[in-house]
Amino acid sequence: MRIAGAAAAVGIAFAVAAPGTVQAAGRATPTCGTDDLRISFADRLGGGMNHAGGTLEFRNTTGRTCALRGYPGLGLEDARHKALPTTTVRGTTWYADDPGNQLVLLKPGQAAQAVVAWTHTGTDAQKGASLRVTPPAARSYRTVPLDDTVDFGELHVTAVAHRVPVRG
Image 1 (cartoon, helix red, strand yellow):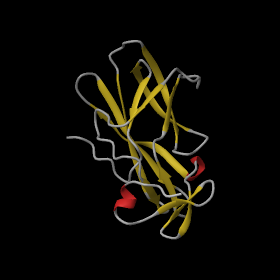
Image 2 (cartoon, one colour):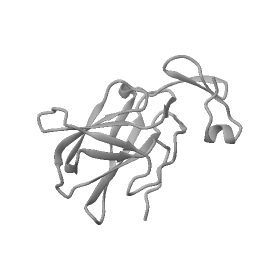
Image 3 (cartoon, one colour):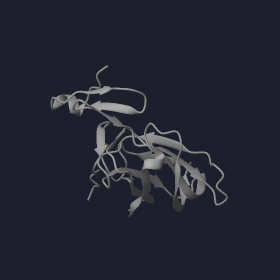
Image 4 (cartoon, rainbow, N blue to C red):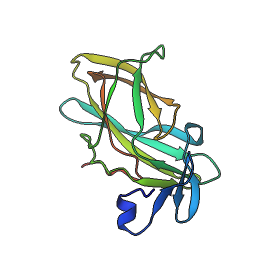
């Protein structure tokens, strides 16, 4: 099975090798699991018109290369770590254009990013003490401090990339 996309356009074929791995340049590379990553906000983004957000960073903490592809899962939780109703919208955000679904290989110590955004006008708002972040293809999450209100519980997120350029 071939995975089409930007990688195929430059002549590099990626294939699924086994569950939890990808085939890249002839070698099987394990998928980055939640335990393989330190997940945090690299920075918080403010802006006009009641928009807020941040750049999520996924840093490989293992001694081996691992791979990410796609969009992180997101969920809000309250101060008691109870899940709150959350809707995640994948694609371009207020702050960044979506880089698209692409394979990202992370060497030990390297990081990838995804930009998350929301509005906080108070309209049907959820008070999120923390943000649950599930790496692409993972089944578990880490919590990241949020401490903000999120209108309608709606979060917008880009795909993971080595660097997601934030708009001016």
